[in-house]
Amino acid sequence: MNSITNSPLQQITFQNQSFLLKRDDLLHKDFSGNKARKFYYYFQNDFPDIDTIISYGSNQSNAMYSLSVLAKLKGWRIYLLCRSYSLIFKRTSARKL
Image (cartoon, rainbow, N blue to C red; front, top):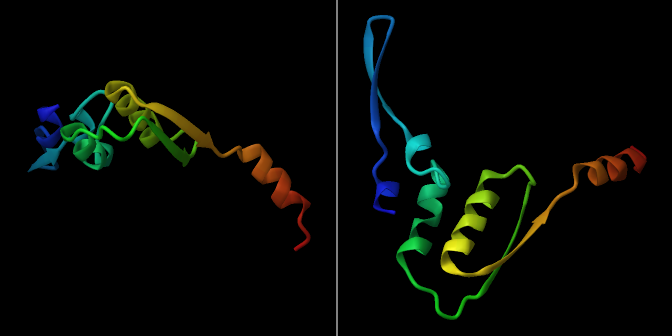
């Protein structure tokens, strides 16, 4: 997991200007960008008293996916609570404005 701390650089040229892009999207197949940094601490340390984690977020959240991979690697149970957008729409459409 050491590659998680070193974002690869890519040199590109656009309109005759050279740029270096920090490619956080290429850090790791399951942990890219800010998720790599967010969960790095948990990779590097042991938590013997933790056996279950609970998280809440969107059903399309990359962070929820990364967290589930982390839980699998650590041997933790995980409960992901996801918001249902159809229920939110029904609730908000029933309100009087």
